Amino acid sequence: MTGLTPRAIVQQLDQYIIGQDAAKRAVAIALRNRWRRQQLAEDLRQEVLPKNIIMIGPTGVGKTEIARRLANLANAPFVKVEASHYTEVGYHGRDVESMVRELVELSANMVRAEAWEQVRPQAERNAQERLLDALYEPPEPEPGDADRLQLQKRARERLGELLAEGKLDERTVEIEVSEKPVVIQGMSVGGEEMGFDMQGFLEEMMPSRTERRRMTVSEARQVLVRQECEKLVDRQSVARRAVWHAENHGIIFIDELDKIAASAGETYGPDVSREGVQRDLLPIVEGCTVPTRYGMVRTDHILFMAAGAFNVAKPSDLIPEMQGRFPIRVELNDLTKQDFVRILTEPRNALTRQYRALLETEGVRLEFRDEAVERIAEFAEQINLRTQSIGARRLQTVMEKLLESISFEAPDLGQKEVVVDRAYVDEKLAELVKDEDLTRYIL
Image (cartoon, rainbow, N blue to C red; front, side):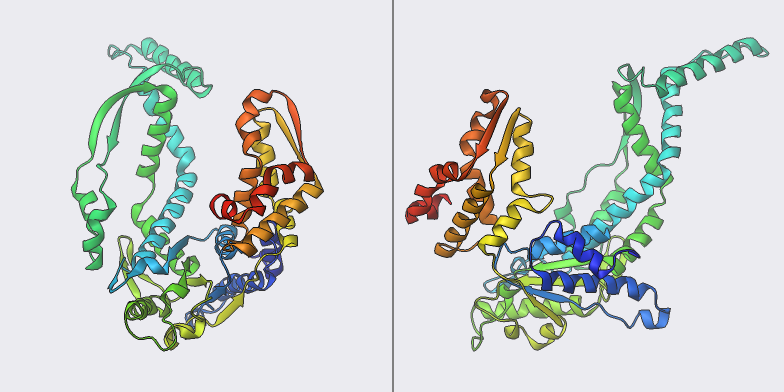
């Protein structure tokens, strides 16, 4: 994080997201503030709370992508939830605390993966010894038979060299495989609501099942390395670090926040349920302690990012306490034709680059002319204006329809170059865009 200044963060986000500079600056400052907080003295560090953000804008303009890329950039545990999943007409849906449990579970997976990488060299050495034991079982030498003992030692060393070089990978070997029965996640929901980790309890109670299996040496090596990593990693240490990582670096993205905002002047029907969900969410966002299978987790310093179109309800329709917990609000703009042109060409994961790479696997070289990209962007903008706007996602629909015949025939074309120009785009899309009924159903 030392080198991730706000400017550097925005530059990284620019590689994947076009426009929306205000939102990028806001999230960059929020992320940098987390690093600044870690540099403070302990007493002041606890007082500095994250500045939660609401991103306001129509679908498909980059709200979720900004949050996801930000988490990847900071290597932070990231969970995306939808506020509407926590309510239906007249009753609440999922337990709101489940979002924190998901975050800690993801944090534990990240910490465990890092710990495994640290112990992997030792685990590979241990696995090598176990493989040698399985491949080479010499008879017990007679007492005092030093020559036979030396021969066996040299034979084992030679076998170890062959094993390290991969020359025995296809040989079959029999090893002991230890597995714990899988506990279905749904079984633990009721217990977790009471603050009791039923899943963890059942996993501890169920004994490991050990059986001997025959497999190739290469497969056995992977199984044994995984077993040795589990032995070498301290589970309690992983749990403590996972909780700390989630508390100090976790990001929870709450989508569709506008769906639980009660419309002005209405206090009956589904709006009662919406306000109830807000009040359930409020303690999580404000800061509370949530019991998880890895320990108690404080949510005070988790960064909450919310998003919604807010085309019916407004942020001011949220209950005042919820508004106060999201002090930063940024508006994301709808996408124009020029934005679509940039989205098709500039990002590292641009659709034109993706389709080129996909068709190159079939030996087809695909070239997009600038005039074709302009025309595709123009059609996408027209369709969004005439039908429901779905932002940049419209480009995926248009591109798939445009290249449908090429994608289908690519295996039979052989080594060939296909040029997509304005005439080709008009041939494939003009009639569809002109006919409103076809547009609604196909594009």
